[in-house]
Amino acid sequence: MEDSSRAKIESLVSTQRALFKTHATKDLEFRIGNLKKFRSAILKYETRIADALWLDLHKSPEEVYLTETSIVLGEIDCHLKHLRSWASPKSIPTPLPILPSSSRILYEPLGTALIIAPWNYPFQMLLNPLVGAISSGCCALLKPSPYTPNIAKVMEELVAEIFDPAYIAMVQGGREVNQILLEQRFDVIFFTGSPTLGKIVMQAAAKFLTPVVLELGGKSPCIMDAGANIKLAARRIAWGKCINAGQTCIAPDYLFVHQSVKERLVREFAIAVEGMYGKVIKESRYFPRIVNAQAVERLQKLMQHGKISYGGEVDVDQKFIAPTIIEDVRADFPIMQEEIFGPLLPVITFEKLDSVVEFINSNEKPLAFYYFGPEKVAREILIKTTSGGGCINDTLIHIANHRLPFGGVGNSGMGNYHGKFSFQAFSHARGIVSSVTWIDLPFKYPPFKFFKWVKKIL
Image (cartoon, rainbow, N blue to C red):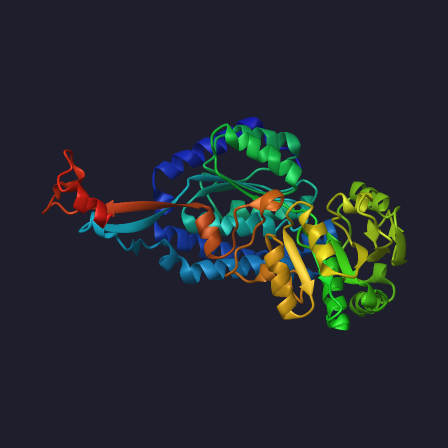
């Protein structure tokens, strides 16, 4: 696809800022109406969305629905159900010293939003934040990844069909287009991508003091304790690692497994993978592909250290890498130095959980955290570690609850979204105090009469 020109980008930013100044997008019925149009368009385009993601990532229609379209549809439904309540002014208790004034919070849209999405979940991660932008009353400029061109084109057509470009529009291109976008003045930037690129976005936003939501990534740890249900845990870990061929920001990145159950874990992992995808995984229509040849090459290099105890098959032409367990892994290996973003699972054994906690805390704060074992121990581990989110005795599914905030912490991001948190991400909570005019207490004015009594009240 042709890159959007600087002139087009600057024109879109200008027209969106002009529309926002008319206050039209703040109208609650306008927001609700556009959410409904958005939902209808997704249903209309559902087959084309699935076809495009098959071409780009070899995703089955079932996986597309579970991990892409259903999440956006569910987000829209959540906002349609609750938006009137979220957007209404909230009365707040007023402290005694400023009575008889009253206090409330008004939620107002931040303005024009820039939303930049990655390639791994290109539909969900571009359009899910858009729900929050519409819900709050913002205008939005969208930028998909050029690495998944088929779905990018379908999304561009969907957006153009239902939205005025002065309200919501999409631009296409690579890094040069990103650079042009980041030179513009927006009122909020929502970026999903790597921590390295997140720093570039934050640096650009600093020029205008633009608030940012950064949904980044990192190495999300997984722990399998001796007391875990090994068969179930292996199946859920395999599922979390194989969805989208491991190209998931919240996939289990590496696994600490108690040495007493390691051998069984490897066996059960293999059984689980083949139960989902068959003996010849490459022939399964359910197992996705790596996004491009460069990513395949990077993953191959990560496989060169340690011992492959399961999987290891690579087909460069088909961009296929089989689910792979790698043992005898050291902390200084390349596979432990960067986010894997593929179906490779380094496995490290442990005897005592304290050593695992120490290792996790010695690295950057992860986006997700997974523990398999007794609930009581899980609670202790959660107290001693931190992450953006996570699961106990499961993987990935915390992203499916629209009532939970989704986001990172530290190197894995800042800010969160989903459900009400998406509405808040694109809104400003404006605190207002309304004072009466029928009385004006003199205590706040110089010369501060009765100050000793006032001090006791305060």
